[in-house]
Amino acid sequence: MVNNAAFQMTHSALEEIGDDEFDRTMKTNLYAMFYICKATVPHILAGGSIINTASINADQPKPKLLAEKGIRSNAVAPGPIWTPMIPATMPPEQVESFGDQVPLQRMGQPAELAPSYVMLASDESSYVSSATIAVTGGVAVI
Image 1: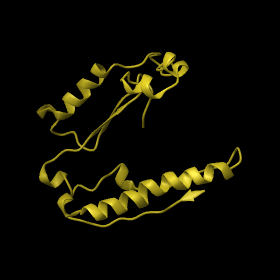
Image 2 (image 1 turned 30 degrees about the vertical axis):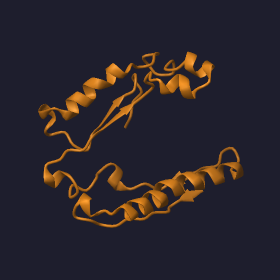
Image 3 (image 1 turned 135 degrees about the vertical axis):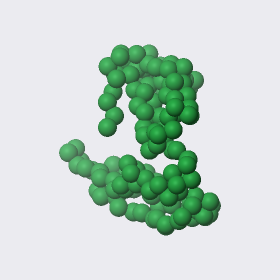
Image 4 (image 1 turned 135 degrees about the horizontal axis):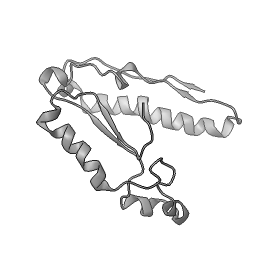
């Protein structure tokens, strides 16, 4: 299954994007992908394939919306981090081995994420933008 549904408009500033347009974008580009995949899975045999179309903007966002205003935008991508959500949403057997699958063979602690957020917020990172910092226990993220 190839999912190629998309909606996109061009704007000069983030403030130009109205709530209705944002809602339409999410429903077309994100919700549709989820529901199409969910509907497809029961019909695909082993060895089948689901291919979702993304955009170059995921890796190379246009600087117009933020960068030209001197605003940096970055992300922190955590791996298995121990939060209250883990035991609240997983079966006990998964909780017991949570984090064992990463090279460091343990879950991370929320405090181990903090340095990445602090670094990205600091003036020392004034040249860092469009970056993703993977805090994953050794799992490579490219």
